[in-house]
Amino acid sequence: MAESVSAKQVAARKGRRPGLFSSFKNEFRNKDRRLAYYMIAPVLIIILAVAVYPIVYAIYLSFQEVIPNQPSHWAGLQNYTQMFSDPIFHSALLNTAIFTVCSVALELVLGIPIALALNRAFKGRGVARAASLAPYAFPTAIWAIMWRLMFQDQVGIMQYISTKLHIFTDPILGSSGALLIAGVIVDVWKTTPFMALLILAGLQVIPRDVYEAARVDGATPWQQFWRITLPLVKPALLVAVLFRTLDAWRVYDLFWVMGSKQLNSLSTYVYTGVSVSQLDFSLGNAAAVFVFVSSLLIALVFLRGIGTRAQG
Amino acid sequence: MYESRLSRTAFYFFVALFVIMLLFPLLWILKLSLISPAELQQSPPTLLPHSFDTGSYERAFSDSRFVHGLTNSIIIAGITTIICLIVGSIAAYALARLKFTLRTPVMTIILAIAFFPAVAILGPLFLQFTTLHLINTYWAMVIPDTLFALPLSIYLLVAYFQELPTSLEEAARVDGASTLQVFRRITLPLSLPGIVTTGLLTFIFAWNEFLFANTFAFDERTQPATVAIPNFATVHTQDFGAQAAASLIVTVPLVLLVLFFQRRIVSGLTAGSTTG
Image (cartoon, rainbow over all chains, first blue to last red; front, side):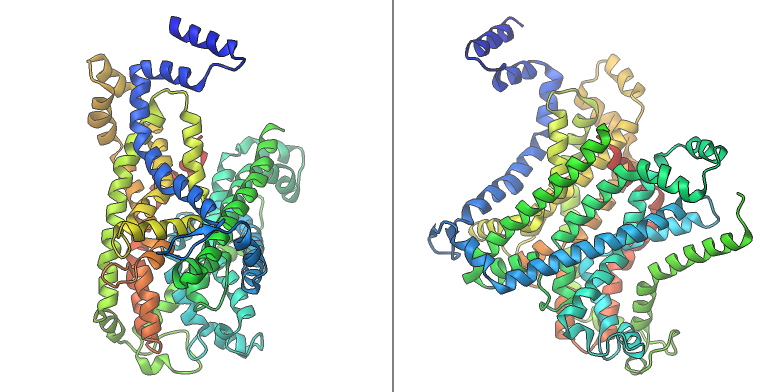
């Protein structure tokens, strides 16, 4: 105790708050608190070694000209200027943006009514909820293989239907525009049920008597939805949408497997640079940093939204 | 409550449509995997199968790449799950039960990893794994998989530990047990159902991983199934039946497990998302 006061005084004399170090020393003198730090240490070490160090290294490398197995040297912003003038990067960015906006919007619009339905008491609700969880267990890469079989131009059912209905008569897997639309459909098909479950979790928190009161006051179901359900479920919605947006923004498995390497996303651009052609390593790594920074910005925008809602 | 028969019918129609659409891809692929090659090439395709042929499964299992993929997936996902459960349960106990100043920042850091884009560290990891000669080994996948599976494991376990009544633990403490003894002898055995669910979800997470496996494993001796099957599909381009069979073999066991543990997983995921 006496020591901590003196530490505080020292800190005060230097015009700072009590230093981090001295509060840690106090924290460590308590046996149970010390144990807590030992118990979380392995996790923190893994995070430091496998996430923090590599991302710092990635940012450093993005200003270097790197060819694996050769000494690298300072390159300034060259990697970024080269990347931003690369037409393949443009198409990757555009594809990723279109894919993210379309698939998340569709998942939200379809997920809300499904969640509302699953929240009602009805016979077979257990089966419906269980079925919603099934696609969650699917590896996306395998899901993409399955859908490629269905879009395939000789035996694919989707190609057959789209040709018969004159929606799209050319091979779907051969056109990058059609592939992107197919990618959105396949993603929505897989993830909407999970989105619905996330929204359902938010719905279940809403107390029933709020609706009773609204009914007594003569509110129509439509009014109840807009005035009660939507505002109350908004925090859960925002979390679900943030989660899905960040997931869609780094789409890789689906594009790589279903598009047979013809459909670019930001992540396939990184992959091609880092793993396929060693000469493009620096470009791929710069794009990786771009994905990191843009994801961070997306998260910050959403978190501000969630934060202000929680307070207001 | 006050609704008409018509609106109830419409409601059931909507739910039925949803479930049918959910299961359609799976059932269609199941049909593709079980019909004869001749029927597979038929146009127009029919909704119901007219032949039965297990040849597609035999061809999938006779491909060494695919069989290796299955074993490798089990090994990689298995090791990842064990590490996550050990490291994760220890950390989760501290986060659920012990008081310390940095608890909230630590929870936030762990949550941030769940949102961290894996692709951002692909380059540095590739360079480091090359230097450490880890490329084409299981560790090149286990290490990043562990990092990205840990947040899910920890959040689920924290939720489970917090649900447990503290009375037994307090009684043991009165009898002189240390924190670690309480954790090992009382909390862990009591939360076995939670640990099993967490283990299952961690296993599925690692089983489904594709980016790191596709980047760090070029050799079929260490490639997991998620990488082996797309490669298999580029080799056997015309064997649609075997592609369908291989896809089903790696997904159906997991889907069945998820359905079996369904109730617990939904409540676990929900608890995980509301733990702060």
